[in-house]
Amino acid sequence: MAALIWLIVGVALVAAEILSGDFVLVMLGAAALGAAGVSALGAGELVSAAAFAVLALGLVVGARPALKRRLTAGPDHRSGVEALLGGTAVVVSTVDAHGGRVRIGGEVWSARSLDHSVLEPGAEVTVVEIRGATAVVLGV
Image (cartoon, rainbow, N blue to C red; front, side, top):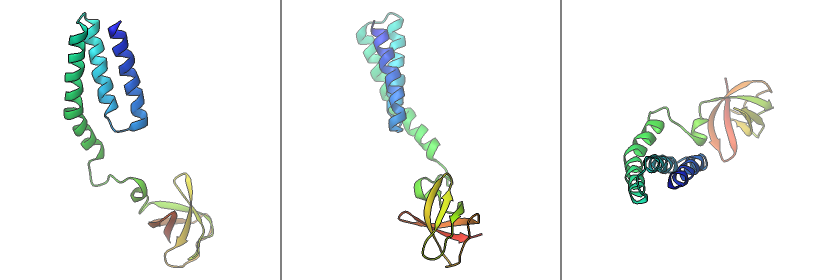
């Protein structure tokens, strides 16, 4: 019975990681799955709890930082608005110095031209800056 409880807790924690994305819950979930294994082998509840504690500590303190470094390492890692800079967009409605619309990836953004040129729909442009919710673009 204890092995089943550890198993359910482990799966729930791993599934909850999808919402947090910080690699803590997945480490705790893996530790709970390890405790489920220890319990399934016939160990008592105290031994299972100790196995959970040791595995959780080892994974959160040892494996998590290395995993986070590996996933976020490198000079090319950019996220959020920073990831849009230098990218290509397509003009959706005429863009000039005062406004317009561009499609960046799958999203439509308000935009304005950096050099005050008029950019027609369908033109490819480069995103040079994001000011608030407006992309500042330059014709290619």
